Image (cartoon, rainbow, N blue to C red; front, side):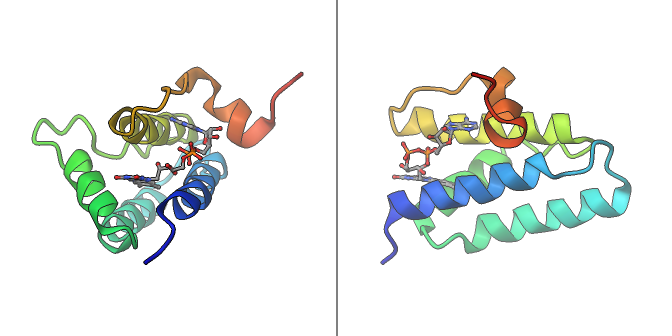
Length: 110
Ligand code: FAD
């Protein structure tokens, strides 16, 4: 079975990097592609308990966790919230989503 921790770290790098390179304003084809990716990702991610929980989180009946794909800013924030949901579940510290872009796109200024 895959190493769930190493797989998780590399996957978050991929997912946040996809948000960081997402168009500043996404047209409908770009939104459709990303929605399709996320749907398949949430079914195929090779940690199956992780995938089940992630799918259930995205499909919350209120609709509040549906991917927000109109722009890079929205999508990056949404991905940060998705990651924080997993952080909470695992008892890890939450990340302050105001800093997602510094962490994953522009780099820390220090
Ligand atoms: P990670 O959580 O992997 O984070 C990597 C880096 O991302 C951090 O060092 C930090 O710089 C940055 N970061 C942290 N939080 C955020 C955020 N909210 N937004 C932006 N950047 C952030 N593991 C399980 O044991 N059970 C599960 O059910 C589970 N579900 C998962 C579901 C998904 C979709 C994914 C991708 C991973 C899942 N994992 C799960 C793995 C888990 O999330 C971690 O990747 C793993 O525990 C390693 O944690 P880490 O402390 O090294 O940092």
